[in-house]
Length: 424
Ligand SMILES: Cc1ncc(COP(=O)(O)O)c(C=O)c1O
Image 1 (cartoon, helix red, strand yellow):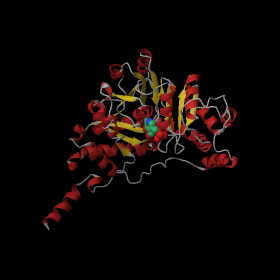
Image 2 (cartoon, rainbow, N blue to C red; image 1 turned 90 degrees about the vertical axis):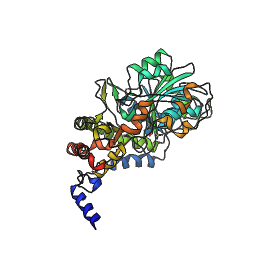
Image 3 (cartoon, rainbow, N blue to C red; image 1 turned 30 degrees about the vertical axis):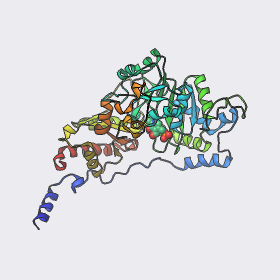
């Protein structure tokens, strides 16, 4: 029975919850996501009872619809001249690429760190993504990596504001302009983010957003494009509506395209969610700074850097970098397990892989004259390291917790660092 005695003695020495110690957090309840109440029910019922569940066929009906109202509201919030609601964030990126003229055989420069759609959307029109590396501190596309990747077939840059933190909107639009490339900002993570006081999604040809279930503004599914150019809006409109033109007849078709429209039930929900969303953005902008200060004081934890050009942050995730060396070599995955055991909700690692490493790309046969697109040989060491070892995330709902609860998340991280020996 000597073994049993040993085990018991170890138990009493244990501090970490993953080993049987008391968790730092026992009573924390994550805000339900999405948050909703009777006002959302009323908004949905109103459209439901009207019997008009789509946004309508004529321009006048479309403008009067709940979707039309939401488009104007969202455009104003992001300082865009025009917006077009569509049925997902994925189709928003596809429409944007088509509307700027990306077609078969073109190349599109994308960051190697994102959700797959930023890179895979162009495949649906026979174009190829060209992966470039990211900045090690922000996780955003590295402007210095873009120009070397530009070739004669490059048509566009499709970047992401990863996690909601804006990519460099001083330098990248300049690069796009200099090389006559279209610029698309995949802003699926970045509702509410601003660069120098202006909403993201307005610095290039198009911004694209998602309203899928887990996004910071949701209707279960949905998406929207923003643009400051009427011609771009018109092209996007046509691609989302079966190739119709805005002021032409219902049965006149001009483009190869699909039905990618948003329903008015979703429009109603987005409208009723919107005031709540605005308040949530404000709260998250206070909360992230507190978390930055508390977590940033722990050696080995590095939040995304403050940048005075970023005047407001939207969030899909709160991102911080984990340096296992400062945790005595404790691998990130083990750190995250320990963090969950301490009662920290919504703790994750983002998507976990650099995009070019997915089988989708690794197994793709690409003509050999495309040296930039031989995905087996792509190397983006920063994105690979961040994705596989360093990036840690907290779901955006965490930033709706109160200050005392946020402080306990930092306490849990500090506790794991102090007791990392227990896990080695
Ligand atoms: C960066 C990014 N782009 C595009 C999308 C696609 O959005 P949707 O799920 O609405 O199609 C997502 C969804 O998670 C995303 O994270």
